[in-house]
Length: 91
Image 1 (cartoon, one colour):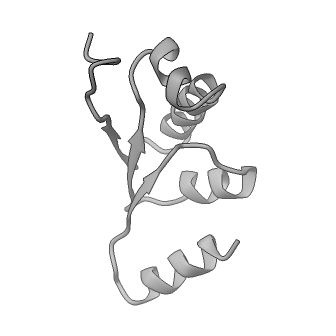
Image 2 (cartoon, rainbow, N blue to C red; image 1 turned 45 degrees about the horizontal axis):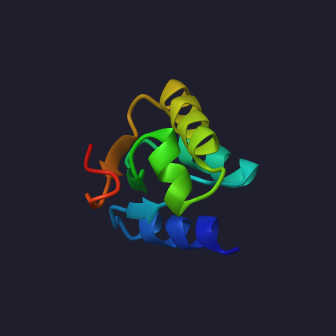
Image 3 (cartoon, rainbow, N blue to C red; image 1 turned 60 degrees about the vertical axis):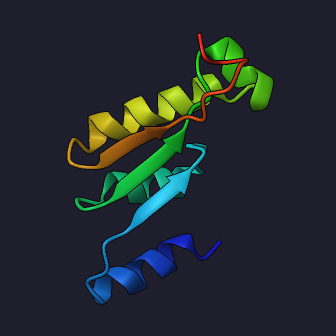
């Protein structure tokens, strides 16, 4: 719940933030992220929608939409995709 306050404290002390996330955010968090010029997100995607569903039921479309919306609002935010390759998602 204190995510925005914590980030603002770091910013005031000139600390760069890199956040590992599942990409599922509340509207206030989405708006906060959209307003950040220097921020890096490391988002976990487990492969195609079908494969992702195996690990995280029903989140792939929301995750994808959140990232596309964020990119549209903030072309400067850095987004890195993380994926663990396993036998079930290697193809």
